[in-house]
Image (cartoon, rainbow, N blue to C red; front, side, top):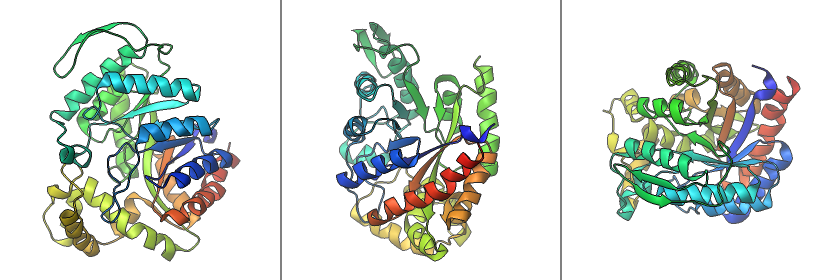
Length: 352
């Protein structure tokens, strides 16, 4: 595949508003292709859990920007009824002139359990929700009697042309991967679960599943949600990645504990983890014990050249849309994005 087909996006920060706006405008100016907002109730941090609503952020960015693609990364069907999601997605596509993509996932405890929101049977709920959303966004009446949702002569109008709404899946499990192959337009897994060799093999599985479902195996755009700590000096990048990088590993790959002689800690897995004060203190103690080697293996950490080498390993494994989640303090975000654009984006443009 040609180099010009490689796209680059980034995750906007959870807060503050000025930085969210500034980073999206900076990304549009510097040649990033997309901006994504994590749809969370809380920020992923043991120290600061401030977080704005992804949907309102996307609406604001749809007005403030002109070219860049926008998306949620990702929303779940537990907090919002699929009809509400469908209406918001349609509205955002009209506001942004068809620049919005809907990212969907099965959900995490931190966004549901503290608020008393039922998220039982998350994968089946997700599947039914996507099927309903696909029907509703066409602007026609929908009657549906399902396991989780019941609709009678329901309509979302104005709708969108057929297939105008692109749905991306944050699929990291066998069941959601199969669902992605059948129902989605894009795949946005998290890199710390899928290092390059695993990404390559899993992408081939998804293509096989798409073929089995009667779809073109290339109809699902292969993306990647990649944590990035980039700096002119490696030691500065290491410092930025140490806390959040290890936190992502214990949240998504809890078996990493085995490397330090502890059993796997499923209570810290994001499907179970709730960021309260007590848990955050326990997490901080555990994170200090973890080595950095797994962070280097599964994330892009280091100088611009080192980050390019890691990103290119994912590109060679088949990734075509890299969404960078920059691991840095707020005052370093624009500088990190500048380094990324100067080295990584420029590299792929030069090869096109």
